Length: 102
Image 1: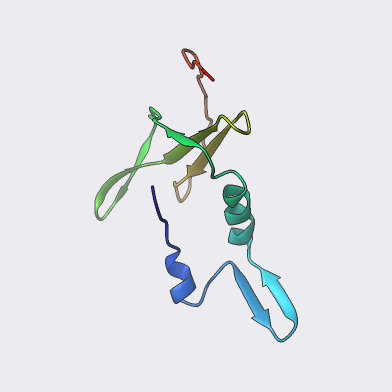
Image 2: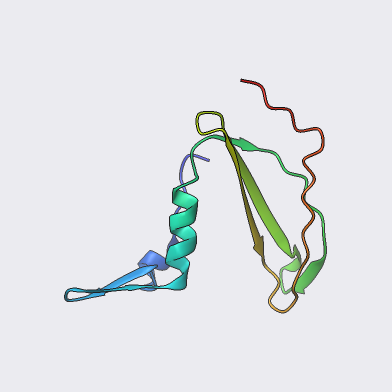
């Protein structure tokens, strides 16, 4: 991915708001901050499976995930979100077969 946009900035619900000298950080700010600190590296293909929920547009998988491997920082960053409006979920992460070569 070369670029990602945040639609909420144009809709006046950005992660940060200011009023004079005061700064308000919405909860979404912290997620964007964590992601921005771990975004460098090579994206890895993930196999994601699990439950779905129905929408007017059709079924949607409850979990979405992405993963980035940074050889320079020697770390693997896994980003997971539960998209279900009502259900909790348990997640099993299987790194079996992951080979890292320098």
